[in-house]
Amino acid sequence: MSPAQRHRSPSGKLTSRTRLSARDFILVEGSALIDLFLLIGFLLGVWMVPRFGRIRMQAVGFAGMAAGMLVLLAAVGLTNSNLHISLVFAGFILFNLLMNAGPNSTTFTLAPILFPTQLRGTAGGFAAGIAKLGATLGVFLLPILKEKFGIPSVLGIMSVASLLGLTVTPVLRREDPE
Image 1 (cartoon, helix red, strand yellow):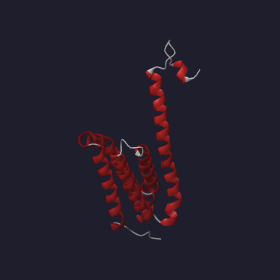
Image 2: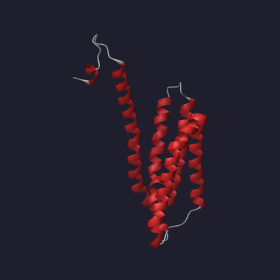
Image 3: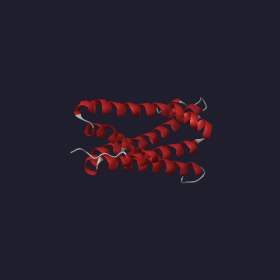
């Protein structure tokens, strides 16, 4: 017996519970497709960081994250367009892919090479801790900012934060000691 058959009313019509389940399943599929690019980005980071360098990949990642947010911002402006869904997928895919190929990968690879052996564990832990603090603050602050200023403002803030990372990366650049 299929899920749709289990949620039919005595008259044989599908109930709202079935429609909600089917809609939820479609949303989960879309989310899984977008999240797949987190994994692909991580794998690209593993391959690209040693070849192109940590600083370059971090900068490319921040640029891609900003671009992804700007694509999402464009999607908000085109809500009634046929392009809306495509732009939402493209924006999230670009953001997820380059976040993991760039800054997410370099968070864990820069500290071990830039600090003396006695400080490497502390530096890596500090970098990871600050990243977790930022993620935690984002979980609490972004919904508040969305409610107060709207989605376009939040996307703009995220894009500016990524551009700030792109700007700070070369300014604070330190060459590998090797």
